[in-house]
Amino acid sequence: MIQIDDKLISEDIFSEEFVCNLTKCKGACCVEGDVGAPLDKDELVILDNIYDKIKPYLTEAGIKALDEQGTWTTDPMDGMYVTPMIEDAECAYVTFDDRGITKCGIEKAYEDGAIDWQKPISCHLYPIRVTEYSTFSALNYHEWPICNDACTLGKELQVPVYKFLKTPLTRKYGEDFYTTLSDVAEEWKKEYGK
Image 1 (cartoon, one colour):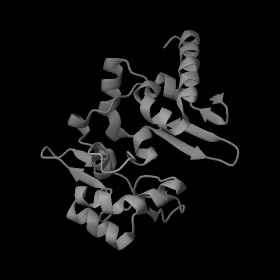
Image 2 (cartoon, one colour):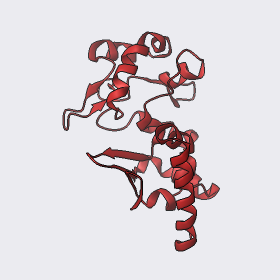
Image 3 (cartoon, helix red, strand yellow):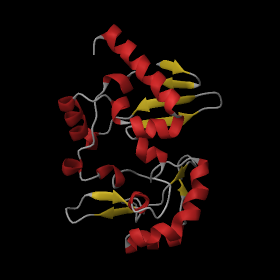
């Protein structure tokens, strides 16, 4: 682990390579799993406030799930905030294109200028998962077999996780943090040769 300010960062973020390959996985991360996407507490109010603006971008099943469950819910196992799911399948905010590839309805609304919030930061940061502790945040690389094609493409293109996630890391922690992270990654690369 590497420490930058109050963040502990797994070295896997420097060593592993990753580039989403939606033509292969079809966005399975929005469909697979036991619960919806993790949410930060401040995102709950955002979801409540933007719901009417994103509703036109959602599927009928998604709207039904959100009307029944609310714009967010909690994981019954640990009480963490998560996005609702449609009948324990895909995230309620998911849409599908004509090729069956998932797209986030929130992100579609953002791209159209209907809202100014892109999507939950946990979705944007994937495959990094952030765990918040009382005095620090832990940033870990999350391996999931459904992302094997992303790992293969990342290796082909030689894109480490932290570079693939430059935009969301900057969104979450700021430009200064990302610059420091990049500098640390370069030093790590020199020392460990990857």
